[in-house]
Length: 256
Image 1 (cartoon, rainbow, N blue to C red):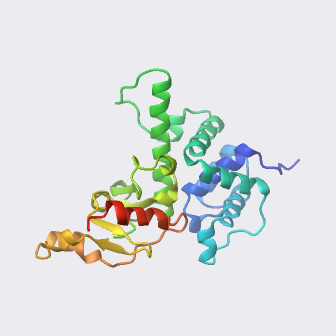
Image 2 (image 1 turned 60 degrees about the vertical axis):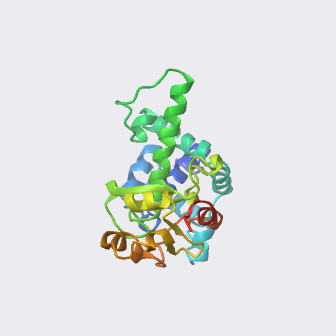
Image 3 (image 1 turned 180 degrees about the horizontal axis):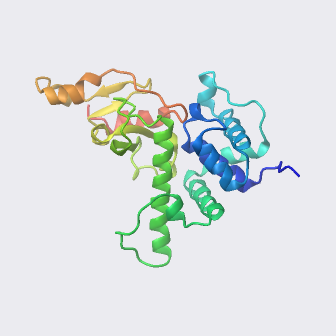
């Protein structure tokens, strides 16, 4: 008998895949779709349809005329709202579920290396592992949303890319894992962004600090930073940076 009804656990895993996959490349032949479909015992076509159903709930995709698949379930809407109300909790739960389905440790599933780290036992160890797992989830989500490219330069070397927080990690505990509080930058521009030497305006343009403009005779600063002033960033295919987070960075972090 065909397997029809999706469980809450399967739907959470499907949303995990939605976060991590490049939406424009989602198809039943996509290796990521095939991999996770096998893990949860669904066909690639069924999982791809579920990813498309989540796309219909993304308001930013709707604004761009990308509506995903029209038909979906109430459970998808419930899971969408649960994630958006508790990114930290649901991101971790989705990774735990993947570990359960694959019969692996959560560290293996999240591809985090703990060999060189010294941990206390018990609850403190759990806390550290959960933070590392969630950081890995956030990085995967941000990099896939920006199609593995720096939003400013277009640099496509994954090892040099950072999932940069718009509102700093320490300043907003509730939005640490919210993908709309992230932007994919290369390591140099990530550092410049963190230090306030550049910002992204609410109309998605790079704005360089006036402090750097005093170095207009320095070729390295000109090539790395000044030439991007007022340039529009490469927008993600999902999870657009939230304008309230960009406004915070413009006001509180950017060096005027």
